[in-house]
Image (cartoon, rainbow, N blue to C red; front, side, top):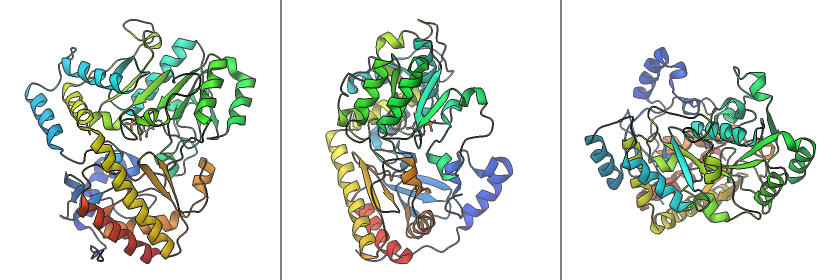
Amino acid sequence: TSPVTPYPLDAPASEQLLGRARQVIPGGVNSPVRAFRSVGGTPRFMERAHGPWLWDADGRRYVDLVCSWGPMILGHAHPDVLAAVTQAAGEGFSFGTPTAREVALAEEIVSRVEPVEQVRLVNSGTEATMSALRLARGFTGRSVVVKFAGCYHGHVDALLAQAGSGVATFALPDSAGVPQSAAGETVVLPYNDVPALEQLFAERGDQIAAVITEAAPGNMGVVPPEPGFTDALRRVTLEHDALLISDEVMTGFRCSRAGWFGLEGMPQGGAPDLFTFGKVMGGGFPTAAFGGRAEVMAMLAPEGPVYQAGTLSGNPVASAAGLATLQACTDQTYRRLDQVSQALAGAVTESFTRHGIPHRIQWAGSMFSVFFREGAVRSYTDAQAQDQERFARFFHAMLRRGVHLPPSCYEAWFVSAAHGDEAVEVAIAAIEDSAAEVA
Ligand code: PLP
């Protein structure tokens, strides 16, 4: 593949926009990971996107390996999704009443993920995990929640302890503003560590409402559960009448048509009690869901005593986008995701090896990430021991060559089924040139 001519070092239009943004938006961004803090430099302000491509305010084109942090599994502005959104928007934006579209989206989710009998639609992954926790606490009458270091479940007070993603990127042990009372009800365990889990339950099992885990973690980089880990989560929670919440916000409908559950299959002892979804199921619009056994979901208002609500929940335009996206996710889509991921990861292995850059690639289905270190990454502690400085240089080398990676070494590289041969070739050439540059 021929080398890619790098863009200039500066990005005048984005720099100017960032200056304006900083006046009126803290840090100039509406979500911290967008700010390039851990890699330095100016975030690119995007103007439009199509298929695998993004165009920034300076008119430069990038291969998009962020895909809006997961949702854009079909690529940008997919014609079926665009048609569905246009049709729905033409019929009104929000009614504050039930609509057929949200029923169809719920049916689609329930039909794909076998243990999920009912879902409640919400507006973000954060709302999904927050509501799932409340439901688990209401159902069990207990308050303690167990999470794993390096797992990110959104910016829920109780779940911001040792979270991955942006919290990891900024090396925040926690967040200011989380009351001790909220953090005090959360126990954080090392991931993939069955003895630690067993010990905690032996000591405090009767206080624990739920264990929440990323189905296959992607927010400390991709660290899949080791064989037997999910089974152990199920066994221990069942033994102590606690619920198991599988957070599939990132993996749902991406790792397979039934998410990580569809790949790993039923844990020994039975399915998780609750699941959370987001990202792909909204097709780029703000919609998400939590769901599970009907018996547990019956605790929710208006049927039960656990309150949960939302002015825009089940929004018809967002539901149309999500439904059209899921319906367009065919076997061919998942095959293409596999091909693109394999091609990119293969190029990383080849170029990094050629240039002597220590690396490790890990997978959860077609979801993968590149660690700037050698050896298996089983936990957050392992993930933190990587060459973040070299990642930052690699990130910018790629950006200048027209490939937009997630601006953090703790993130998966997201691909879409619209990543065609040209996008893959540009990315592979950029990987080789960037590896040479940072070697
Ligand atoms: N859970 C997981 C596994 C996630 O990856 C994320 C977001 O990255 C969330 C929850 C929070 O979702 P949102 O950003 O839509 O609030």
